Length: 376
Image (cartoon, rainbow, N blue to C red; front, side):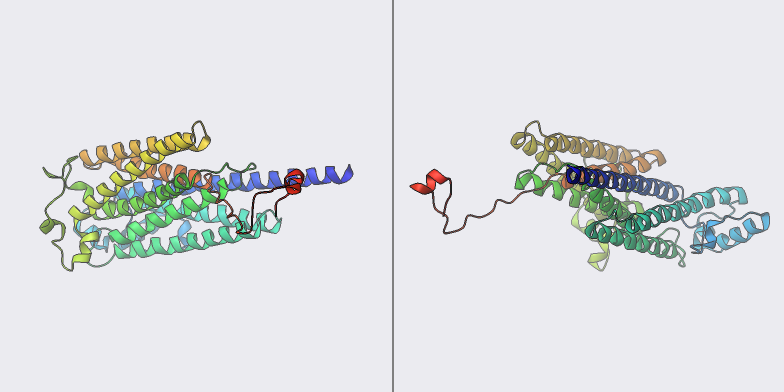
């Protein structure tokens, strides 16, 4: 009796430990979404190049005196963005754009602390399995890389003749944040106390395909945002009277490979086509899950994801038709994180169980074997 009580107590302790880790991971995921939102606002307000230096520690303190503000302003006035776009900007306007970029960086520092301090405590207290600990360590390293990518992105916008960051670097920065978000919710969903019921191979495969397509679409959306390709072809479902521009326009840049990053027409078309593909796969997945697993949690989640993807597509069309106002562009970016989060949780909770193959020597029981219920 004492041994059973001890086992139950240990199991309860593990459940409580898993729950604490799970809550922590979901809080981190929410902070990453907040980072994406603030980063999107920083980009859409043209604030991302207002801080011209990367000071991970001392940069946490903003200018506190008029002299310090003027020193920062002088650095910004030496950038191509100021000379080309913002000539004549006053100190008060500079403080506004500075606040967005400083807030984005400060939130990044906070997310780093919110990750590493609890991580060390959970690890030291034995609440992390070896597999979970290594997965979290990998996400921590990816977070550090994300900070470096962010500075490389900003530095690209400070080069001669540049008034914004390089589109490819912006897309990489956004996609890395999305990978971190997906990793956090994947690990968190795997800590559920009860095992997820298995699904068919096709349902499980398309659930994972939706995650991959969502990440690809986020990357392509980053290219659209970085190149400002959403400010052209502001019609739908056509692109200025045709389904797609002529090939000569889609591949006007030389060498041809650069069209996928620098050609507004092709960048926007790729984003549209991937959106259509994602929507078709999400709807097919929902119909398939409801048909093969009626009334199940997987079927309900699949239906919810299809609804989210449809809503995100409608929001994307609205953003395009309105030529990317701040509220629409920011909502579209944040809603993409909602789609990715739900798709990742759904994929994690949709395990596919592969049936064990029969041994060649296995044969039906007969005679006394059938009486005993044993087979050869």
